[in-house]
Image 1 (cartoon, rainbow, N blue to C red):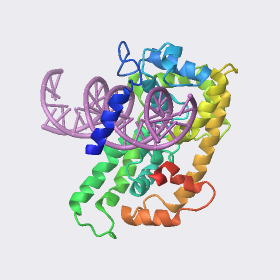
Image 2: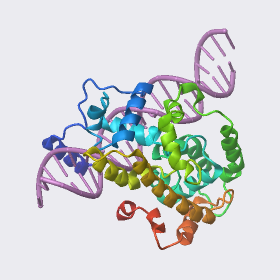
Image 3: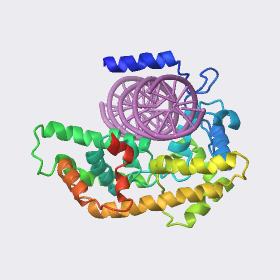
Image 4: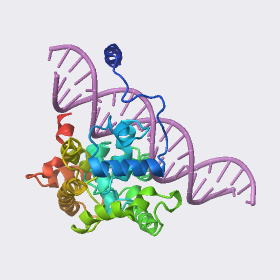
Length: 288
DNA sequence: AATGTCTTCAACCGCCGGCGT
DNA sequence: AACGCCGGCGGTTGAAGACAT
């Protein structure tokens, strides 16, 4: 506590300026026009330095806000719609192993962002585990938990939600864009793949943010911007992640969820070692 | 039909770690 | 080694929609 305070004092002394000028900036929900500007700018130039992007793109937004909007909503590789039972399963397993490392968890769910996973956990899964804690305060670790009994119900819920038109009510600009030539451009990449529509989410942000940055660092500084180039890199990451998932899915079949503590152990024991598979534990995570 | 409550999720905030100088 | 900048992360909030009464 004292340490933290001391740190803050140091920061104050350094006079760290805010990530962006606060005055005159728009906050809150993004308008379709802003989305359009952001998507078109990044498509053409890459995001470059987020801090400078709003100015370059002509947006009255904080760079952070732009980054968030892009990574959580506008990126072409985002998978939208309900979580599948497999995804739910994986989230539970990974959460058991990693805790609230949403970015790490999301990196193993193609096309899902950390925000998606976090929201999904908080709104759907946490309740189950909270009620579990109440039902089994000193839980014996072997039994099938009430949550797992509800598992089927949860999967039904996810499936039933599939039939609901996504974001129908909000005039989703991304969906609109999807039907424009920009969308065509994005689709070209996906159509060369397996067509599942998903890609590495945060992994494509954190893991591929370097690739994005690499692309735009060339594109922004003079070289002809190449959205396709950018997307191809994203695609490569996507494939890698999906291979991980394929391997991972074999080790955790849906509807066979065990107690999280057991499954975590199983997960860690069963998880293939070698190659890039242990990227599962991000170096940053391991180091902490 | 109106109102109140609950749920969902996009967005913000503040902190942290990595990297360059 | 110290400093400053930047991107990324996790926690939290609040608006909007869904649902219940």
